[in-house]
Amino acid sequence: MKLTFIDDYELATITDDGAVSLTDDIEDIRVMPPQQQINHVIANWDSYKPKFEARIAEGGAKPLSDVTLQAPLPKPISIACMAVNYMEDGLLIEKPAPQAFFKNSHGVLGDGTTMNLPDHPASIFEGEAEIALVVGKKATNVDPADAYDYIFGYLNFVDGSARGLQTGMGLPFTMKCQDESAPLGPWITTADEIENPMNLHVQQRNNGKVTHDYNTDDMANDIPASLAFITSNVTLEPGDVLALGTNHQGLHPLQDGDVVEQEADSLGKLTFHVKDELKRTWGRHTRAEWREQGGKGNTPQLTGKY
View 1 (cartoon, rainbow, N blue to C red):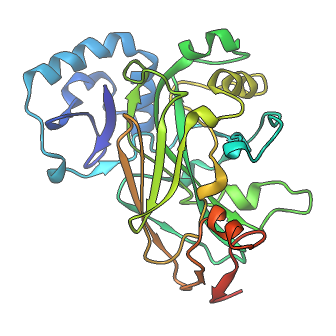
View 2: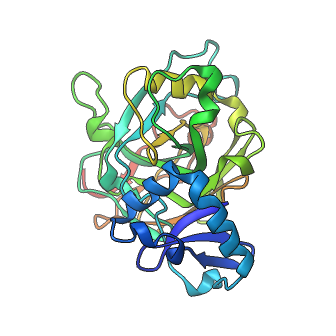
């Protein structure tokens, strides 16, 4: 099943025919804010799933062109993100030890919305194409062998990153925790619809140009290992997010006017726009393209402030 919010944060499921409203099936929790609603549904999925399936069978879907998709998780309590978690198509010889950081829930953007680049002296702004898992039940010290039992579903996730802003110790707060830096969606696909999350094709396009194009089988610390690592340090609750990292070779500068589309198998297409009041520009290269041209580091800024 595919779950999200539509219009004025009305819980819905997405079918081949469009969006089916589920509001009549959650009368008991409609007074809750949207994030609390979806958290409650996830935590009590066995009770809600049959009701939702019956609602789908009744029909009455609205065409997606007639609704506005909202973020399926408007304000998660925790957005944990794995870092340096891909083997980069063989560029890394040794598997990196698991490492992670957290993003700000005010960073969440839904489908069709706009990422505003901040007036900060970043060397480059990039959007890391990732998949993320959605936690289905309270998770503490998860055994890797049991990890998939804790996963409710998966979605597209973009880790917006402002490079060059790390503090003196190299900590990622200023680089990773900006507002409007975490597009996700367009919906949550429940785990039962994903045959093998460790074999998903992920593609991101910027203004139609393919940038990221990789498979999750390149992941260094797989999904069970990642969830075990995070929950050995912090507890995750239903509706929390764990983004699983990216293959960095497709990273490229985000610039004013860009339209970014991201798709992964069975997870739908997430689209967001980029706005930069400062109109800064960079060369239109992915990291792999820049390296092939003999460039070092990030693609350099060409024009604009800083």
